[in-house]
Length: 127
Image 1 (cartoon, rainbow, N blue to C red):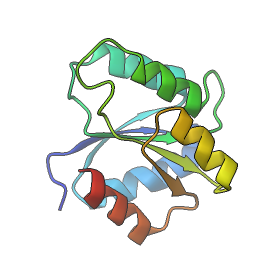
Image 2 (cartoon, rainbow, N blue to C red):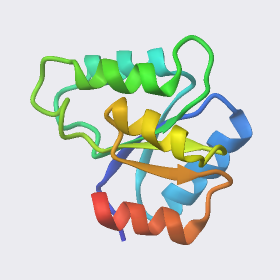
Image 3 (cartoon, rainbow, N blue to C red):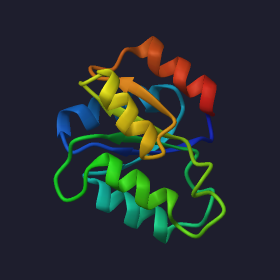
Image 4 (tube, rainbow, N blue to C red):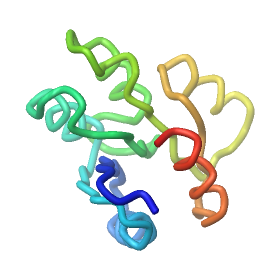
């Protein structure tokens, strides 16, 4: 369905990371993972522009949280920094959380635990 697409999954919880990666891989997506926002920023900075088609970004992580990481990614001086879809992942789906993620430059919000239909809908919209 999404064969050839590459996603960076940024999630500090090993079980959540494993479940999300499995769901994405079942849809034909290549998944790279990062355990925190700093690792995600470093990976995106090191790889060529356009390497990732989308980023799923957890909100609450050690080292660097999702909003800080998204702002830093958006600030990178490269062609894909402004257009790369960054989807917030959080168990907190409150309006103020959605506003914080939007202000950080994230495109959309995926609630945890992940609903497969919502995941598919987001992927269809952004990939």
